[in-house]
Length: 168
Ligand SMILES: [Ca+2]
Ligand SMILES: [Ca+2]
Image 1: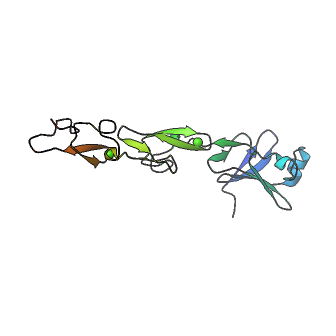
Image 2 (image 1 turned 180 degrees about the horizontal axis):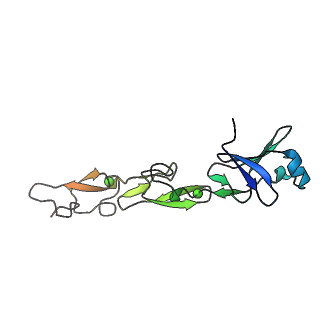
Image 3 (image 1 turned 180 degrees about the vertical axis):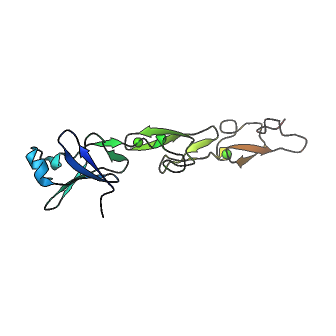
């Protein structure tokens, strides 16, 4: 696969070719001449996360959630997923995106909770599975879960309070 782009790594004038989150230093002669370690066997070639090499070249690549630093092709920097677009870079069901090192998590609006699997989506809280008077109003005769909230079915002779979550 041909490199997507080729940029000069100033000030040493090494060329690097970037493929997504991998960076490829094109010419072993160049970095030997510049005194850089080019062998993955020696301190992982200086790569912060991962080093790969063949007869000619050495690559540094980063773990999921990180990108090669624009200033140093051996360094990995956290991707701020929250700076990207909801539904593309971070989950559309993440109400308030919170960046973390190597990943992200979410803060959820009232009535929702963070999914426990990946901590990256907000899912409806089923208040009715909880305790009367704790998770839903004690004056709610029969709790009915709704997305983002809950409502009540009221005993005969009672009406649903305008707040929708108790019987009066
Ligand atoms: Ca991140
Ligand atoms: Ca609910």
